[in-house]
Length: 340
Image (cartoon, rainbow, N blue to C red; front, side, top):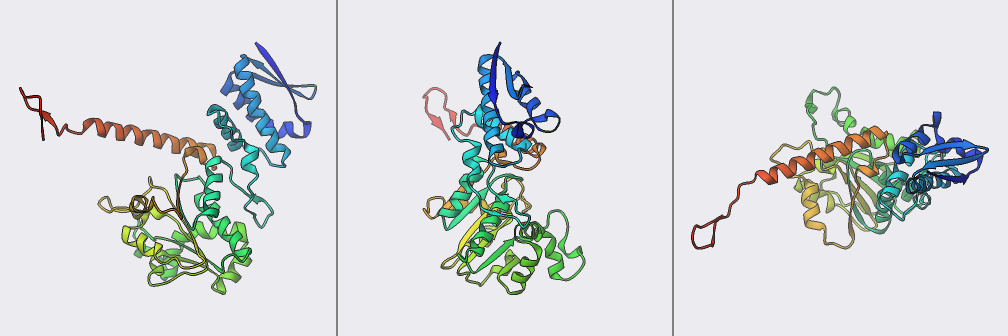
């Protein structure tokens, strides 16, 4: 049994341990160690290798706390993930990237290495595809980047769009005029705008036509110069819609296309525009494809477990289908040659 003692300021210990010591208990369970606070020092007792690993996680959380962050369960889970993978990246390094601040003054920044690379790609490329499961911050971070560019006068307007695909309910049965019918599909975009920009600033810019939120069908026939364009739910576009959207982009514009390939609402016989774009455009230098995974989920930890469970189930299903495929090549008896 080995004991590791780490000196961390008392102001940060409560933040690191979590409410009712929940974070400390999670680290204890992960590494089979005992973590106690004595005389202002954190003492870790257990197997030498595990005490070192647990100490590394606590050190990462301490650095995050010392930078003025409130430690959350997602931070603890991700610190453990980085340590398990022997990743040289640190939470402190990821925390360095601040995109903007919400109207309440809360900083908007990536929380995982995947999100950090996604943000860097948006800065470097003219067109970026952000592909990943729900809860990975694809749309929210893209919105934050768009609003920051708009405030810095790098673009003159923001255009947000998504396909109005019916997910099990008929659009015609919704009450109201056309705008009322499509608003529910665009609600997630409104929510992000309100949080980052504020309702009043959003309404003013909306009235001036500087911010536009519209269904994808409204993009046809337009050329979008000097604009920040975000296409959300791109997995629900058809190849024709995706091509139409990408060919709207003009000079001085930047586009971010986000989508979750596991949540398509298209009919079973319809090819997704996101899938086709991935195959057609992957060799073009100024277009980036960024892939986020269950490790990048920043919603409630249960969401991360749900996403991971679905990923594992789909992988198992794909493997079973591969095993069941008929052998199309049969060996002809006697001559050793293969016959189709």
